[in-house]
Length: 377
Ligand code: AOF
Ligand code: ZN
Image 1 (cartoon, rainbow, N blue to C red):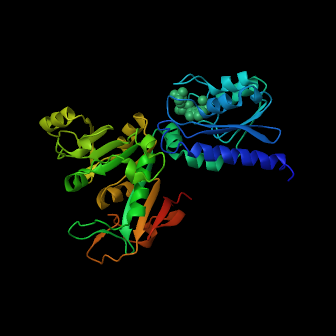
Image 2 (image 1 turned 30 degrees about the vertical axis):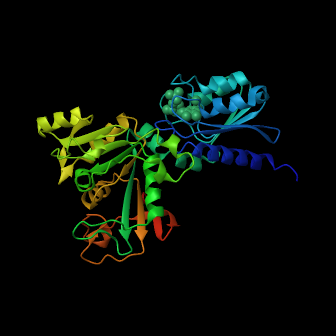
Image 3 (image 1 turned 90 degrees about the vertical axis):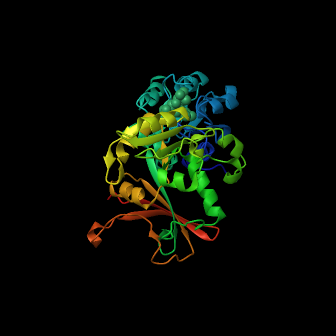
């Protein structure tokens, strides 16, 4: 078979680099997922990806495999090579020292410490740099990292499980189980890719859930390694009703409890003694203001956060325009008109309806997963 056209080969290499980056989906946090391919004369020489913050960046890992063969080669990287000393040395210096001739970059690094200076440094060293190949796919890999860097807020994903008639619990509150095991395993994976899981005190009081990832529930070969990083657990608890013995305060992983100003200092102390970090938020409607919580989570390097709350808070978050993505698991079940609705979102006229765009829809066992985003146009 003849070699592909150079432009086709470039796309193939970047597509491969994106695949490699995806291997870090559950482990790189708070760093972005990044992949790198090194090729020369139509042959792939080396591959690398970033696995964990503090460990080698994608380019460094690929260069280590390529060795001397990197001289005169092309590097395909899904994110602009870094130019700063962070937990590791700058990737641009490593690419310059290795003597690569060309660097293809899918997207510039929104980190203000880098933001174009990596590309500039490579060009100053005489390396040919091109930017923007498969950029949309590269951006889709790191929605949280990009939003945190550009807007000092995490990417907010709202998870909901409903019946075909849009109900999430019976009038009594009973809701186990609407969806089947495949959908519930998928929720574990949503948790695993998140920096934080936000829930309300009501569900802590009702289920005493630990909100930790458990390897056996992920159904992935690398589950043990994934569970070494536990997402931060966040409980919205205006009046500090979380019992200090709650499972959400135990186990590996940090817990943040958000309360209203003036919450009982003794309860506060008891929760702090049980290991929680406490922050105060202004009251808003029936609950707490979410916007300052999101700002606080971005300060704590949270990229993607998962909202797993009841209909009231979920509705408030959508109404306030704070939700970037809705992930709705829909079960082939009718729960009837007395059951609770998906969101508490008072809307009176069609004109006020919230328009969404469905970006993905797939079957998970007997259920369906619908991924939707608010329409921006
Ligand atoms: C790259 N390649 O594979 C990654 C990059 O603290 P450090 O040293 O790990 O640096 C983290 C920052 O480096 C991160 O915020 C982002 O700007 C960039 N990540 N850059 O060239 C990689 N993971
Ligand atoms: Zn780097």
